[in-house]
Length: 213
Ligand code: GAR
Image (cartoon, protein in one colour):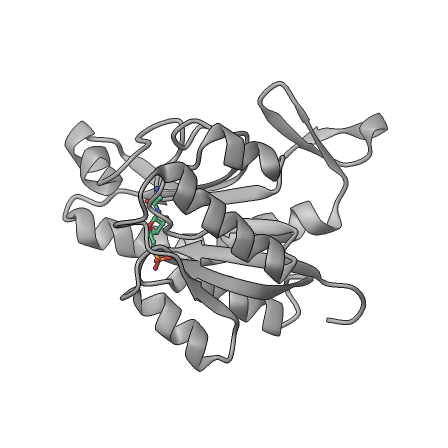
């Protein structure tokens, strides 16, 4: 992709397949961004090893033994600011961010979550969806606020639940949708006009707004 690209930090805690999907989209010209930092709060995260092997700038800021949450977040912020990132993508980052941290990057932090929010926020959500008996689940990309998986929704993809599903098979099919949804949602935010009205992310010029679709 030619022209200016937006510097992006990706925060992970584990496997990092959503980081890889974002990275691939930047390389293939589907996302006008460049990943300037991959940061993990877990030293052994597989995704950080992969990011290193791709020659990306990485940082490990262990949350375990960091002292307070404020101290950990201060170190994370330092890395993000030093890397010059303008957007932050949480990609399997299993930490809740404080209101102070979120306020430092207003409407510039995105998260991907493996359910159709506001159903099933939090952890182990595929099992929770199966236990509840939903017929459709999916994934959500949303702007991050200080709550748990509660910020304004940018995009969603639905996935049918099958009779034979267990949490693993459902998670696999949702993950495939995540890998398409995340780069696509971020691309829209970077390339289209948008604003937030109430809880709604509205795309398009203010004169002819339409809901995110
Ligand atoms: C993804 O399914 C992501 O949606 C989920 O963790 C997985 C990370 O996979 N995130 C959350 O549950 C956040 N609440 P990945 O490391 O392969 O991208």
